[in-house]
Length: 623
Image: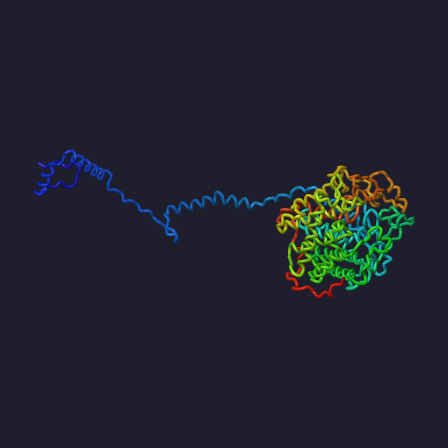
């Protein structure tokens, strides 16, 4: 009888050898044998119930050249990239494609607000046929007969600007005012554009330079005279003239002579500087820029003629009392620098850096008053202009020695501005007495505040943190803070708590020594003396002379708001030109919008990249 096979599979009868093996195995431990049988049974059961075991799947790989990765990992990476693009990249692309409103400029600071007003003063001072958009409602055409006695000037001397509260057109300070405005535009054009005043200030400059081109034969290469002013005033005179009469410019009915001079090294130099600087401003108008630079070359040549070295104001009573020129060597240095920047002609820089020029100008003599920039003393401005050349281009030999001297003189001038060094007196309220307490102090304050702020910007543009005043290191911020303190004083931070700029702030002068502002625009034409009642009136000006900076307080911070105190309450063209320049240098408008603080390249666009290896023979220099 056969044993039963309950699990299936083969079940054969063992042969003899198998029996011997079985008999030997009978001696083995029965417990171990039983366990082995159960294990074998378990495996057999599993194979019967579950079928044969599955073959283990192999991972697939992708060869990327520099690395071999699992295909599964590669797919995970690709899906992550797609998910990131959908969740992050796509929203960013959509957000950027939607047009956004650009953030507006920061709110204007007080310097910007004051500058908008200060420029309007020039609109109010215009003479001639006024444009319809002049913006000053109480002003009209005036001075249309000016220059009718100048038979050699076609169309007369119509246009330009009245100098101050009277109606005289003084060409010496007028030219300096245009030079200052042009300089400020050259250095800070981005700021003017940011404030929306770029076109306005250029129009004001052109109004002045168009007129200056009339004061000599600008189409000729050689001239023998230059007109110095239109209008006159006798001291304590009793005949109708620009001082004896109190008339609006529109009502002038008295003689206004045109004064010409045959010698004008100072006036000629300043007119040349004004035209040369303006030619840089108008480089985008090639024809006009060329006209200005050619006119500048003609009048510069006239100023430098060896037989015409008498100051323009000497023995000229109608000029000498008001705008007397004390020297012309400063105008030589000033105009030569501007002519070089405008034309790139090396003869101008050769003359400006000849050691004999600063010697004759006493530029390195450490004379206190020679460190004050003004309409009569251009030395600090000229030295700064020439320092600019060294700081930005560093031309080297043969100019380096003189340029170092100008640079050192500029640094010393700036040291004198600080109260701690005691060079100048200051009022208790903080105003610098650059003209030693005389009348019209503010025009000196603003001109020197401008070049102080500008020098600070020059240093920062070339990554220079400051300079030494003896053992004391002064930073660019120190210099800029000095300039700010002076302008802040003018705008109201003073013992009187009033602004000295008309229309700025809540409290400002209301009784200006100014014929146009004080006489009503009521359709009545007042006679020469009929306007006296408005001069002597205690009422506030009927016409607001917006932006006019008055002469300023006395050495004790005192100020009398009266038309009779002309030294304190009369505005001037040069005063407002300096104010505009200082304000644009200090305002934050236009900073941080992708432009440098000063435009380093505009000034040098005509300057050749290479300089001569040696100066020309000494005979070319005319002392």
